Image (cartoon, rainbow, N blue to C red; front, top):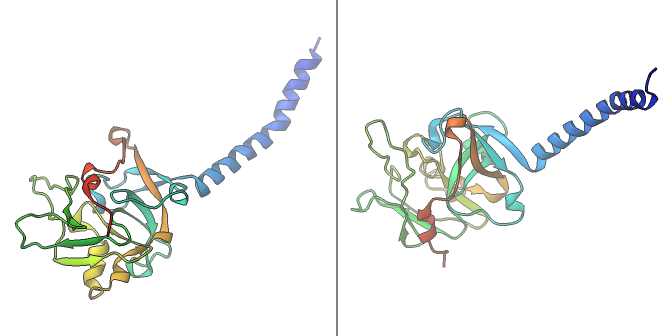
Length: 215
């Protein structure tokens, strides 16, 4: 004898399965569109904080509730002048300066550090080659003030990064072209999740704690 209740439960499950799958797909699409998204690293510009083909998880909501902060790693839609030809190309860099920040560097100085709002920035995360030699914080002298609603961003592998400094030089020191609009940010990269052996949180380095707000 067939258990009528069991048979009803089985048939009910199969009728509801397409609905459950549809809901799961919808939730995944909504999460990707508005909350979290994965990105892979296509270039060496952030080595060795992020290596080529690392995968990071990006929080797309965080800047709806607060402003971007120095030291955070962000994914952003590259300005037209920065793109290599792919429309809507996304870049990943570290925020070095926020609106109003005065940033400078002089390679002739005895202290090889960026200065932000009068305080030297310690950057132990800057790329070191196989010989242990660390990149310079910048490859040229510069002295800028970040405009309102824009950000100065740089890669951790300074000698291999198409970033604010490169575009500052290439644009004949046009600060608008060298910086990115805050509105272009896709989100904050907060963790490396693949490969598993490199999994780590992407926190703000301690050196940024010493930097005062712009006057």
